[in-house]
Length: 311
Image (cartoon, rainbow, N blue to C red; front, side):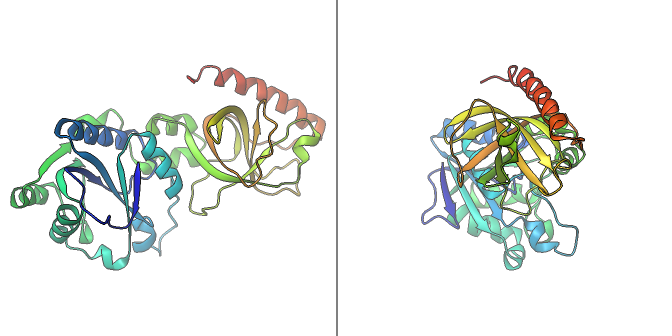
């Protein structure tokens, strides 16, 4: 997948385009991408997703409670590449850009700069200044500029009943399985391995302390999770603690991955932590021995769950 930071230098050949925030790249988003691929294959074209950075709500609604992201830009790039997208165009979102008239946006950006052949949108797609652009306007513009137009119907998306808002709510309330069902995949945390207090190694459970650098990234509810961790190109089973480490008060909040059958030095390396299932709530234990005993149980439970996950 090619990634363009800003408008590409030349229009694409027979560009089959969709556009939007695509936060989380959930199952509904994947349905749209699949439609892009089908159309592009039928016409010898190329798939293009135009998305925005930062998230429009971080620019236009700074006075409201801060929106947490299901995917950072780096995570979004990873997920879209896995979905088989050909081209990703990242457009800087500013207050000035938000004032673009829908008609100008279609003509100047999609048709002239991106080489629009066919546009694919969801049934409730809105765009342009004050979100005044809708499907009826797109139908009119498609005739004026000669591009194809397809809409993913509500009926097609009903199977998923998805919204990024519902996914965020599920993660914040500890309902990981609901979030995974809506996402169509485990929940991804991409972060850098940094040094911690290294107390885990002393009780037989060495951990990779994962720092998620973007403060706007949504971190799920505190607890212990079964996970699949990707280090470079290899995947490993793991269990992950997210929380404040109440048994070891000096530690504070952290995301720590105990990677099974793994002993490499991976400090300063970026790894992918894919949360598969929540094992339990975070608990304060009376001693490190009690914590160690529970961690043995957690590991056994995690291994049972992860054995059922297709490789």
